[in-house]
Image 1 (cartoon, rainbow, N blue to C red):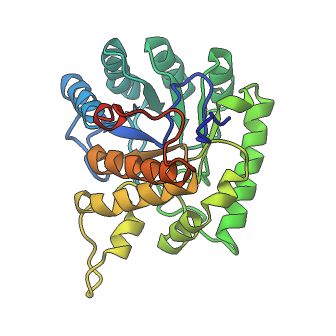
Image 2 (tube, rainbow, N blue to C red; image 1 turned 120 degrees about the vertical axis):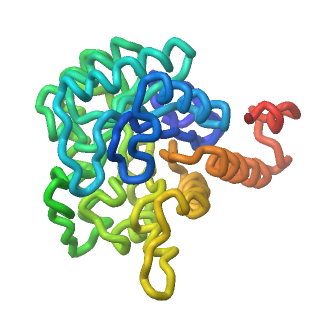
Image 3 (cartoon, rainbow, N blue to C red; image 1 turned 180 degrees about the horizontal axis):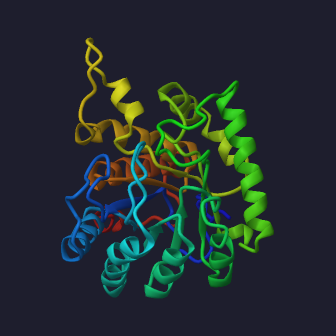
Length: 304
């Protein structure tokens, strides 16, 4: 699951020699950081293409907000939001992840050109999900999840958050493999902010090595989340708004890339795209001749 540069790989997706950048397109009226901004198909497709131009390697398209307190949209509405955007971006050659907890949305998105299914419930929300993904042979993100957040922070109580998240993810991965998804197509995600407070999120970021020990590529989705607001809070405790957390997000992207993450999921792409490329350059500088076999003189300009 690693290529010759030592970076993790996912079967069925392009291979990047550095931490990949997953740009977010929320086709929702109510996402916590950019709800309503990309709500119609044309605007959403354009935004996805803009993110690719800024350095995103793949685009995560979602039609349902998973912020705490969000009410679920119905299946027909989620399909109406997501499928035309997936189709439009796929027509432009973009590598697409679909962010959904519904098997029907995953199935139709894969048929419309999506390459990857990113299910924040890790297949727990919809019993049909794992079978659909397995039948399609698609890669699957298994996120640590303890239930819907409609009632607030569900079961966010831990004795040892790192050990418990790793153990719960290990059990979930076993269920996904049992359901027929190939091991080289499984990605794990610690689920920052889902049934976790700021201290939990920071503890998980401090021990990404423990998550990597699960033996699967790791996706880190920290972008603009509340724990970054807590880190950046004013002395009076007031948190900066979500869109003022992008520099902090890029810092987490650099730390995640350095730790060996396969990809980071972000709303603002350019700073993170720069950050992961700097990390890669430093990795290359550690090799005896300062240059890894796959790099060449054109790499710097070609990165954009």
